[in-house]
Length: 245
Length: 114
Image (cartoon, rainbow over all chains, first blue to last red; front, side, top):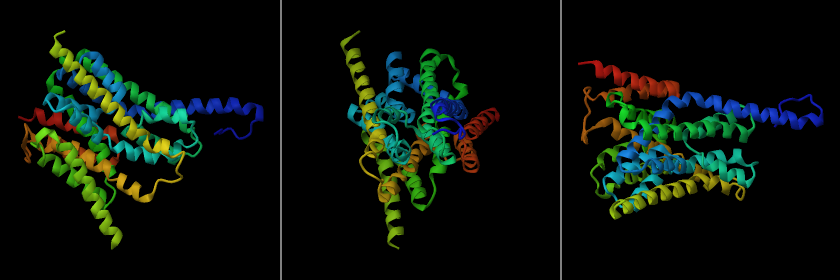
């Protein structure tokens, strides 16, 4: 939508183009604070993939196509342990189950997009793009939804994929002492804490975390799947109790 | 390339393509459905809101409390201490950058302590 109120109708198209560009740029700018976590994240994924026997092309393709670092790391770890392909894929999908929630929450904002743009935008739904976009949409009604989202997505997608390429190229030259891989749980911690908003979400997190630790030795490495489903089920039960009280 | 290596490579591509396709279906689900249904039912919404905390906790907690596969709930576990401090920062700021920076800083600082 156009923010310049006092313009002639014939200038409106020009004005709208300017607004779109501004919103795209502010999307890129708002993403900058995520890069110190996002680039190492991509890097860690690249290094882990190579160590598990991926070629460089496969490692980068994985980040391009899956674009979900946590699911990639989980899949890589399971591949290294020799899990069946089906379990590996299923685990990756379960780790990314949270994107369904983001999809539902962001969908109303994408309503005016063409079907084609909606299909494109969906690929870039991750924790950070979702969090930034929804925050901005709620802050300012006039922000161009598509332009802002594309700015955020571009910055985060490119930096993650570039991070992976960096991991592929430089991986074994970064000393272990830097413990870069610890940036990953910290990134998720930063997302986990605000996701706990009430009793049911707190129970979901507590049970999910507890079961993940308890299920470390479970056959076929079904641990993450079991933990995630237990957490959601426990939260669901608590929700139900509260509802019927 | 040996046949075994070729087979291993096919296995990896299967994982890449399978995970990508599955993840895309999850991402596109409600975004594309929304053209057809008016409102996500509140019940579905509440249940979906349980997924991020359950999954994220399942990913984070083992990284903090396990050391070499064994439970390490002591102050000697640097990652647990750094994670606990980072959790407080995450709670106070709800901001990714300070959470990651403080967590890494604490981890590095603890590594210097003999």
